[in-house]
Length: 333
Image (tube, rainbow, N blue to C red; front, side):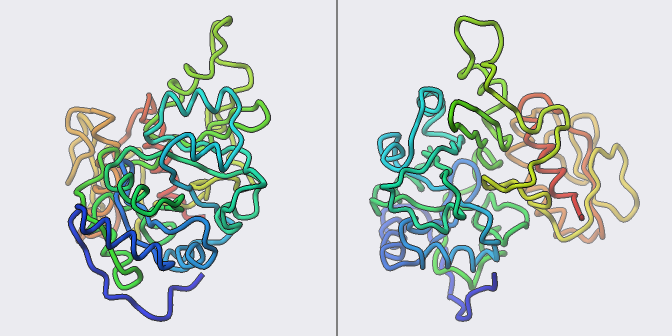
């Protein structure tokens, strides 16, 4: 999709009651605003208004076959929009509010705009924990479609300045509440007809998901649980949730991953014992690495070097999500 024809004079306001009120007024009038969540900054619009949702796709240049995550205030609101089985409900109780998105069957009575779900019979729902997004949900009283606040396929934004650099002139308002705490998009789990699948790795690890859906009478995970991306399994051909495009989160410069030493024309992002021009975590802390990943990629993309390299990062725990983002960022087709 193309960008809107008429550019906006984008304002950036510090989080507070006034910023929330102004953002809610823009959304009530059919507009969109950028707002922080605990994962990354999101581009929020009324999920029940087709024109507002279409404007989000246009501002991002996002393909219309790629569905959006809908943010809601609590589980009660989520269950008014979608059908939850006992495992979906258990996951919601365990991880909401927080960085977990559940893909569940959409209720026929839902008034969610069809563009949000890309015509699918499921909807991706999340109850966020961040104070700014929660305040905006209360102020609007609406479910909010909120993909990452960046140009589609580009590096995700974890700071207000990242949003301004990418979407300045395309949206009216950015709420600034400092850097995102988690720094990685939410874990996505699909729970449909008794089958549980991890569709995207994120801050909630596969081990945590396994623990919740495990059958208490057995040792090990519930037999219906599938980690689509475990053991190098092929990615699905069909897009049935956000964040599944093969090329995503990408810098403008070529990117090599798993690199212990950089070439002369590469900006090296280090990790642990591998130093670099910048580092995800000098101590090898995966939580810190996740929080810094996109910020480091933004800095590397703005550096004077022509290319980017990233040191090896273990795949343990949240390292699986970090490596997933890096693999997609490096993919050039």
